[in-house]
Structures are given as C-alpha cells and as structure tokens.
Length: 244
Length: 244
DNA sequence: GCTATTCATTGATGGCGATCAATGCGCGTG
DNA sequence: CACGCGCATTGATCGCCATCAATGAATAGC
Image 1 (cartoon, each protein chain N blue to C red):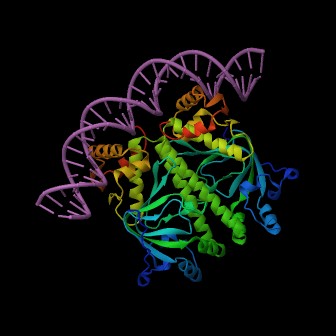
Image 2 (image 1 turned 90 degrees about the vertical axis):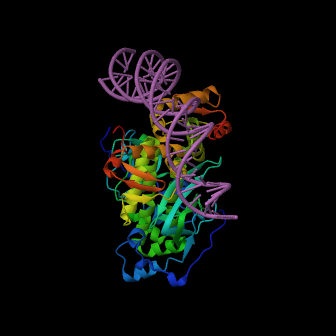
Image 3 (image 1 turned 120 degrees about the vertical axis):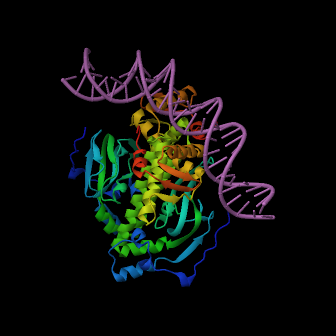
C-alpha cells in the first residue's frame, strides 16, 4: 500500500498534447503550430499509477507537475498531530502538484482512487517555456488562480453549510465535472469511500451515509453503493441552500 | 461604507521597492541592480484605503495585484445564496488579488480593517517582467503556491478541529505573523471583530467569545476587548491539538 | 466459491456549538 | 456629558451531528 509505483512510459503509446482529447482542459488555446510543438515537448514521460498507490507523498521533493490523462485521484494533507483532511478529488484534465512550488516539497499526498495515468510536466521546463510563450504563461497563472478560487469555495462550504447542503454541493460539483468531460451529469460512480467524502466535507462517514439515504427517501436520487443516479438535479441544486 | 476609496499617490512619498522595509517579504532575493530597478518600476501607484473601505469588490475587473505596505485587511467571499465567509486576514508584506487572475474578475471582497496603504502592481507589467527575470517569475510562482498551501491549512482547520483548537490555531498564527514582522509575539491588538473571527473559523461570535474567556480562565492569555496578551504560548500551541 | 476484510447502513444516545436572550462595555457623535 | 449604536460577554436551551454499536453488503484474495 505504501510502495512507490513504477514509472512506465511505453513509447509506442505516447500521445502528443496537440492530439490529446483533453487538450481544451489543460492546454491554452490559440497557440501557433510552432508553439504547439514546443508545448508537446514539455511532457517528459507518462506515468501509470495503480489504484491505491501514491503519485507523490508529502515531504517528497517537488520537481514536476502532473496532468491527469485518465483516472481519479484524491489529495490529502496530514497535520502534525495526525489529523487527515482530504483537500480535493481530481479527474482527467486537472493539474496536480501546485502546492509543491512554494517550498520545493510536496505538501500533501496524492493517491489514485482508480488505475490512472498522468502526464509528467517537469516544472523547470514549464517555467522556461512560459517565459517564451506568453499564452502558456497566462494559462498557467490562470490555472493556479482557479485553484485558489476553488479552495475558497471549499472554505465557504466547510465554514457555513450544514451536512446535507455540503453533500448536495459535492454531488452537484461532481455532476458538472463529469458532464463537462462528456459523461452523464445524472449518473456516475463515486470513486471514493463515504469516509473520504466525509473527510473532504468535514463530516463523519455515518453522516454522509445518512445524508445520501435521506436524499434517496426524498426522491432526489438513487444510491446503490458507489453508483449515483440523480433524478432531480435542479432540486439537488436548491438543496445546497438553507431551508428548502 | 460602500463608496470607493480615492486613489492617492503623493509622489513625494514614494518609496522604491528596493528601499522598502518589506522587501524581504514581497520581493525575490538575489536580484542584480539592474533587475532591482526594473522591479521598482513595476509599482505604478500606491493607494490608501481608509478603515472599512474596500480595496476591491467581487465582480470588479481584475487588472492589478496589491501588496500591503501598511495596515490590515480581510478577504471575504459571498455565495449566491448570501452566505459570507471570511477567507483570510492579510497584513503588511502580503499580496492580495491572486484570485482574480483566473477569471479576470475579482472573486472576493477585500476590505481594510484599519487605515491602510497598498502598492498597486499592474498584472500585465508583472507578467512581462517575470518573463524577463526568472528570479521574479519563480518568486511569483512561489507566492501563489504558498497561498494554495495556506488555504489547505484552513481546510484542515475547518474540517477537523473543534472550536477551541481553531481559536488557538488562529491566535498562534497571528502571533507568528506579528513576530516575523518585528512586533511582539505575545501581545497584539486584534483588528477584526469576534464575528469576523468566527466567520473565518466557521464559528459563531458567541463561541469565539466563550473560547477566549475560557482560555483566559485557564491562564493561557488575557483578553481585554481587542487586546490579547498571551502568557503561555507553548500551551496555546498545545491547545491546537485534541485532548490536552 | 469461500473467507476475510473493507465498506456501508441504520439505530440509540450524547455533547458541542448554535441559537435565543439579556446585560454590559466602549466608542464615536451630537 | 449624554446618548446611541455596534461590539462583547454570559446564561439557558436546543438541535445537529458525532459517537458508539450492531448488522449487512460488497469486494479482494486464496
């Protein structure tokens, strides 16, 4: 469970960024052919991460960012006194590792929740290239900024919402992200356990379970283990607000 | 209370970054004289923000970052359904506005908690210059990354800590930041109300008040309105952890 | 296919912090 | 100085969610 995954880079299977179907998610738009080629060259290797394995661990030295090609991750911070907090769930097209730039060390654990593959982006290469291509520079800054905004939204959730509101917000967020990747907005499989959801939402796993059951009773959705079918997405969205 | 503060830039009082006593806080180290001069030229203007006035509001278009020269700010996000969440308190040497890069619009309100002055850093100038000076580029990336790490620490606080632990963490954090600016680590004045502290910590103002009173009863500190005198900083640090 | 283990559900109970409420204090204003 | 208002403190009560506990279902490993 704690061993380091083996980097695998099957050369024959390399897919250039310019040809990647996640292009709109992790690359800037409006690059010239020349620039595209240079951004392609950024991706040193790919790396497969089997389910349960860490992509990186807190304290490891930071050298690269990671763009998820396939799969699903969680990031988790552990405090000095042993408390664990899931800080996010990441899916295809999203970037991981930004927290390591500041100190040169990763500041959280990133673990695959299903067999996954990431593109390894050496950070000093990205820095160089973003000095030459302003579109890339700006894109990178936007990505970091959006991460900050996302974190602020989580603070709002943890600071002001009640249990079922948090749960509704969580499901709606997942729904939107699946939807924007071409998957169903109303039916999907949770990759994480109730406990991981609870950690992310500042709740205990029993509360998560009860919340889902309650929503099912109310006809908002159907839960069958990790499978979620949302019947009333609009009502679920309303359930994010108090007193409905 | 809601009018826009008047930008004031008394030319005679300009202080170059290279001569600013906050240099170590907001500037990279190891710049050449030439580079220093160019970074100096980044700061377009200064702006005074009287207590209670906004530096920027959510939705306003983003053009500049702001480095605090003097004073104290809070940042606050307001959700669609009207919930308010204080996302941070900022003091001299800290940078504000990073959340606006992603969308081109500010995503939170920044309000002065005391009469303050900020350095206005036009973002496109910063982008240009950081393409030319790698030290500056790297410094900027570090600052953004540290903001993400800070936000993760707040998530941990909101997600896992009980009321008094949160309060202790808050006070210890303030203490450290005052200390690193040359002020006392053990006596300082809170610039924010109990309600603002509560919003930041995910608590009600009564809970904040009770927590402070309790800590006073235990001899950890003395509270007199906004004045805090910490008597046992080490015990306060221990109070951040459960079951002491 | 069977067993072990993790994961999820549901119930009963309790405690922490929210809520409601009243009083007191400090500060800016007239 | 008196007044009003925002801010803070403290008490009493309530409710949401944590905790403790037991059962059941699903998954992995042999």
